[in-house]
Image (cartoon, rainbow, N blue to C red; front, side):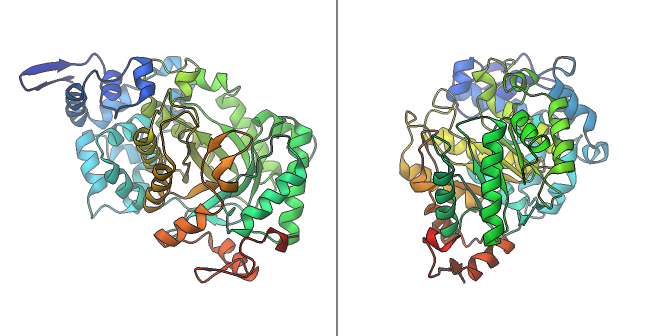
Length: 454
């Protein structure tokens, strides 16, 4: 394995596949902060030339965190589908990229080998792709899952209603949820980030949401995004309804320790949800990720943030989740500093998650000290929908009053659906028509009228 390349008479050599992966990455402020990025565009091109000749087998043999040091590496290696891996092991990354992009390669073909891919393979392919390449392959990949409705079908764009309240005022949460539903949002999930991370508060919000969903016969899911241990107590001890169980994930064992979780804890949560969760299933878990989380907790092991993000997806697929989304600009400009970096990361994350077999959505967002405009954010939402992204967020005027960041508004979701000719899930689409909210691609008499919901 030769990790060197010569460009314009200058030789560039790299000490490891981990270094090649890092220096082949598109520019990211987080990689600069971690001091793992390429020092010039020429070195970046040299790293990509080297990466294109690395085989899939060599990537498997050289994870960015060694097997003996990391539980995520062990999980990926010990559960890899050997038959699917055998179909790609001989390919170079360049060959694999060409195969993914080939017009004759279908989404079903890609799905057949996804269980044999390590996260490093997905990340390596992403680094050799343009934004349009990422969109083309992302649009091919279809991952269909089911809870209380059917999610991820072709021609569909779903959304999460995110009716956060800074005081966890349940009446405020309920009104905001009804408002989102009245704009045709919420078929992915009605999911609240709580201000009070307690079992009692989690159970109260879930119970009120469940009551509203039952009274209005809304075919969707509910979730309170408290820590997984809080949700487990609310479900097991307080016996509250819970359609989806949530947790943020990291791509390294030490990063997950910073989140207060482990593979063993998530296994326990998964078993509890399958035993007591209120959704029809079979997919009952919800995960969020985001480039830079490992670096923010000093748990990156000298690896780049794109590869570490892919490892989050390697962790998530163990639990056959209903939803996964990258909160792409939320951590801040220290990791993704401007519109081009945030947009690139969103397309990378969507591609890698889909390639690894996950139903991927995206919170297309930015914090207020990042260098991104509203126009850039709106363009990203259209790009993601065109790329086959399964769902976006939605909240009042796109401004989360509790978390203080800019995302997708209740108004944006129907607009993006119209622009890209997408519909919500079949069950939710029928419900919208029945309730006079949206019918045959047009707003109905109850569009934007939360008072029409009980």
